[in-house]
Length: 319
Length: 170
Image 1 (cartoon, rainbow over the protein chains, first blue to last red):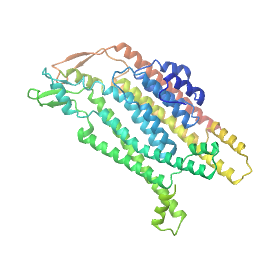
Image 2: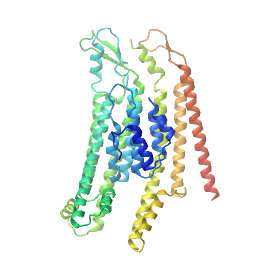
Image 3: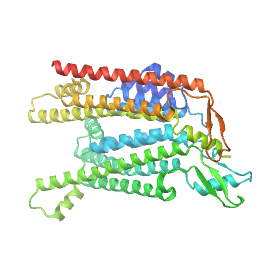
Image 4: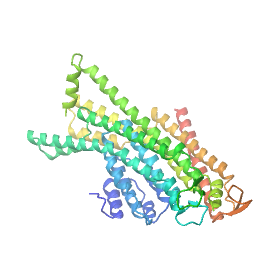
């Protein structure tokens, strides 16, 4: 049984033996010693080449490796544990539509992975590299705080967390449904373990109340994405990182020139994350349209004479 | 103060490491397309199999399980729509690799890391010499990554040629 509290090597060995993923042993041994930017590349290689013997297998092995690599980080700052986050969110993968799975892949590969591997190192020296043309103590900190109320990295991390949270609603609903099904099975007497196992692993059809939960979660996702993009625009107008800021807050004497570190690189990454954000919004809108279209066509196909109220009643009550 | 930041920004708009990271992310993505397509096909076949066995109930449970297992483990022949998906993914891989190598070449004027750059942006006074740390080591690694990238491109092209030739002979 894989848990996040096992040591990385236990996780990896368990992965390799029980699920039979085709992870190369020597690569894993190297992974235990690699650090810095290499870990991102290795992560991606393993993801691509792990044998897709089922989603569980690939996802669990990826989780192993994420845990292994993140636990080897020697950075003194506490880092966000994206591995456990990944584990929770990827559980929703089974019950999503096709577009939902594409969204999830885009989220993990183009946003979380790029954020962790590349963007965090670009913004790593933003405070230490922020130099002001003065010897006045305190002026540096005050100017930095005035122009960067919240760093891009933190905003993106918050955005990713909030945008992925509605998926948890869906996961909870599915778990609830499974629980109800299991109780019904037990009451009706068909309590052999094989049937109960089947309930755990079967894919839920997106109908009834689950449909509503799913659509509401999609709408929330869209709202969060757009809100964060707007917040970004308000705090950092134009999405471009300026090279030079002029600061005159106390205790800086008169007006002081302050220089930002790596402005071009930051602009590049800001634009990249913005583009991926836009793509995610489009995917979510497409998914909403697809679900609504499918439901409408099913309704038109099924019953010709049920009223709208009866249809809604049926949708809400069909568990 | 500030001259260092400005000069660094002028000569290194995007760091090599970030470029390679983005290159790897983009180059590995088309493979996912193929994996997703294969998963989609397997899913359809499984649905068809289950529907088919539901209609004809004489198929035993064990036989059905065996069929499902073979469905999961079989290797799909690269023909039809899968061929097109695979070929498209190869073309995209080539485009991304080539694009990123070209971007690296254009941004850094070749694959060599200079030892000294001269900078005269404001607020630097007149002309200022800026020195880069470990230029030789960086040049070696840049050349290595460029070589690995070109080997990958050659392999992708060979694979594309092989696929096309196989399809044509068939």
